[in-house]
Length: 268
Image 1: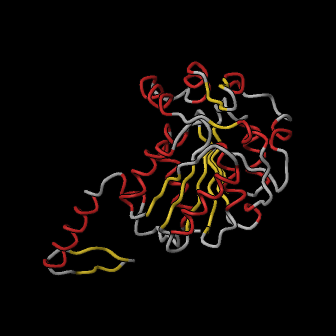
Image 2: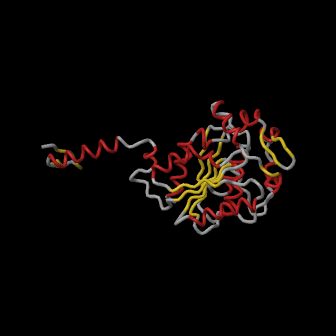
Image 3: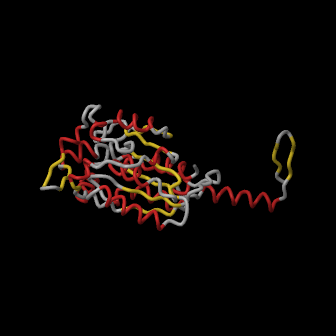
């Protein structure tokens, strides 16, 4: 009959119990990598995740993270940011937040940090996760704040067609998606949505990060937002911060780390 040591004592179990332990161990070993994000020690208070994308992208940019969160039991929605005006973007995000059935982690990348900052006071939002994202204070001029740091190279790659702006292919591949394989980066470039110039001068009227638990992922190789500006914003909000050796698109090049940060926020 199998026996085990437990705190200096010999514990004897019968063969049926021993077989059950072996089966349980085998089942645990068969868990998929995605399932590893929801361990017995992770007891999330929030089962809902709402994500928003920024400029030069669309809602599908969260696919790598979504594919890891869904098997772990999270209800995930990626908002299609209209990229027109900040009020219209806030309205789209609010509609999605309204549909959630309980506590929700609100996640934003890049420009959509403005949406988190403005909309994150929603009663269903339990935590905010900023991924290489803007995080202005209420009424703050983000452009003036960013001007205190060396300009990121991607800024020079924006091209306009009337009031609509987008990144040139060269800037997209080198300054926005620099650590993404070229073939995949070109697909992302093909689906980028144009933004309206009005977005660049928008100001938030609130700072939700002052009243919600906050998490921030800094991209140390970012050429779209200055990494030191990201560090400043993360530090100012008192966020739990991780740093990733990544381009601006850490949600695609480092989806495991971004997923873990979101899961941690879900337990806040």
